Image (cartoon, rainbow, N blue to C red; front, side):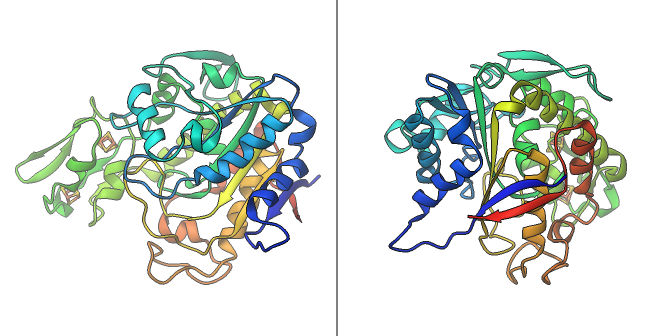
Length: 368
Ligand code: SF4
Ligand code: SF4
């Protein structure tokens, strides 16, 4: 059976502005029936790495907060610390960055809580008994909340083709231990004969795992955390991983973590995908390249699989921009994610999530 995915385009006028439209979208998706008085509601988003500009605008996040508060809930904004060093590697810097990006109480009318604690090890074990993991390590403040609203910025991603709701749940709600377990099979290598010794991969490696040996970059596999940043940093394609094996395994592991979050909140969760500023890569980068397609709108659903499938289809239905990261597949109907990451089969995350029973790839778009 197909699941409902509600869609708000970005048109607005004197009769209804985008704030009102977004709140109406939330009601359509069932937020008004799910929030109970005094519920602690985790609104999971990504505050954007320092230097990134593609993350969801705080004034739209405020609409979600206001809606939940009006219904008697107690919303808080949340994200988890990253695996790598950087401005989101521990809670103090992470909170400062969230403020710098406009996620302050004055702007969003809610407190910000980093869900996995000061150093990323405040977690709860959730039993799932799936193919790769019997249990997963989920950030405590997300697992312990009464309800979850996932607000994902939908964009390209170098390991999963695109990043949407499943990624916001699977990687975004995992503790540091959980992130490490998901990344443990990603192990890039440098093809020496293709390396031009520009050093860009070294600059981007967050853990200092790359050194220059005889004017060729070399990765220390003992230090590497599998974040894949060196792959996108290398302009000549000298950094490679075994995509067929690695990306399939990574996507399945990520989905099993999403399944763990789903196990905590499946009946009391709403998923939003913002199809705005659709950049080619993750908001974890300290930059955001120009969008690959025009802004599309905002989707909301109770089904985490249906919403990602619908979002991918909507992106692929667009004509791609000329001046952007798309190398091929620019035309309407062509696969934009393969146009950026030809070796990544993004459908794997959807089919595996469907197999685990998280939802269905069959959807019906209902325009509000
Ligand atoms: S994947 Fe690349 S950038 Fe990331 S830790 Fe390993 S060597 Fe460094
Ligand atoms: S970015 Fe690529 S070309 Fe430059 S040093 Fe690293 S592997 Fe070599």
